[in-house]
Amino acid sequence: MESKVVDLNFRPISYSHTNELAKVACRHYKINSALHKRLLNDEIYIRDLSLYINKKVYNNQFFYSFDNKLELKLTLESRSFIVKAFYMAALRNYYNSLCAVMDKNKLIALNKLITEDDLSLIISNPPKQKIKKIVRDHFTLRRQLYAMLCEMMSTWLLMLPNPLSVRMKLKFPHRYFCSSFCNQSQYFDNLYWVLDR
Image (cartoon, rainbow, N blue to C red; front, side):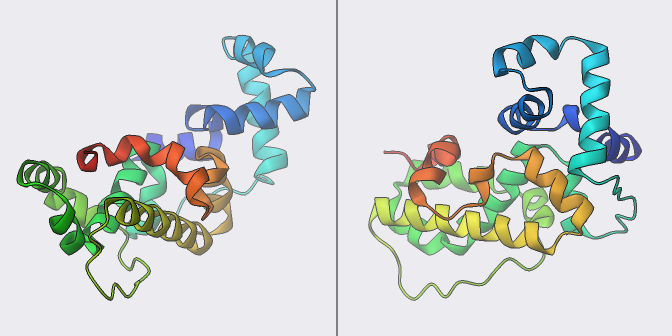
């Protein structure tokens, strides 16, 4: 865990999303993204960019006290791990609807995906949405899952201490925290594979 804390605080290049990192670098150095991509092999460029991000983007704010809070420890994990944890929480909330729209084989595959380890790492108190009835329409269910996923991630981002929140904004593309279905679908489609017909 110690190396993850060091990376999160001092090595933004190691976890930043490619597009978000390129935006920061291109704005700072006034270069295009193709040159930025080539320069990522240069140690001096990486060190300078990391220092710039820590100073100007993070305002030299650092975070070390993760205690035993899952919400904070989750920031140390990879993008895919974090999204999977939230996705599993959303799936759990819509489980009855999933049973209505999925065939038996897909339901078995989904149950294999949701392990006890996944459930224990899910945010302790995800936003509660009142699910009044079972959704039987595949597209509507998919849309509601995306909306819940983004709502949970946005809520998580808002509850994080500022030094962690700004780091997560660089770790994920901005669209992970928006509520528009069109913007979300391109990022989350790969997670929905088990539900595709």
